[in-house]
Length: 200
Image (cartoon, rainbow, N blue to C red; front, side, top):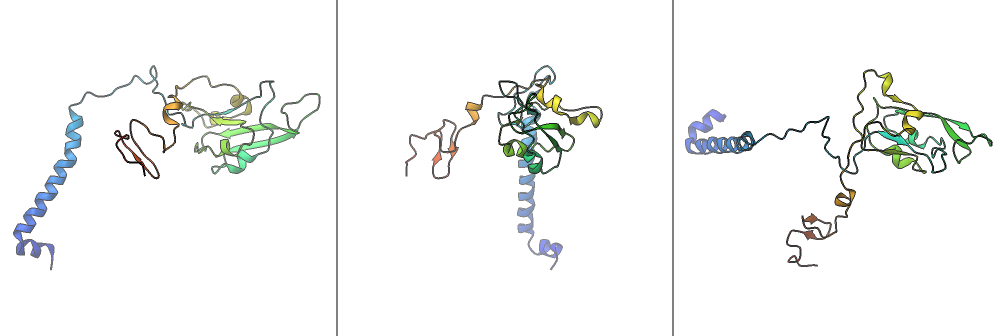
């Protein structure tokens, strides 16, 4: 039995199905109509930058100790953890009279190919000395691919352009905390009326 035969056999059911389909179409189009007459949200992007979330992963940065020595000891754990294989570390031995890092070795060459980086943050997690972190800066476009290879000197300097970040205290909360907005925890459901929800 084909669909056409089914429609001829049951015209009422066919009409109901068509009505349901039209209702679903209107329901989906209602979202478009609801936003059609609203005032558009336009931001003057270069002058006004929207604050990113505190855990946003942007431009990489190498750090120094307060005494001026580099935190990176050239262990290459960040390069080993990188799934995109965009980090290149060449280590060299520290000289006793001219130390670069507190360890036995230092990173003589440290390069990140930003064209290949997927900003996963594995390099930040793998580093045992917190030498590399991912900041909030996302304006990384360049004219040539060669300019997207960040050298050690570029990574040690703070970025020229800064991107604002939202307050981490607002976002860094556990799922079990009782918030006014309501949080679905693992064992409890916290709602706006959390005081009325029975504790189990």
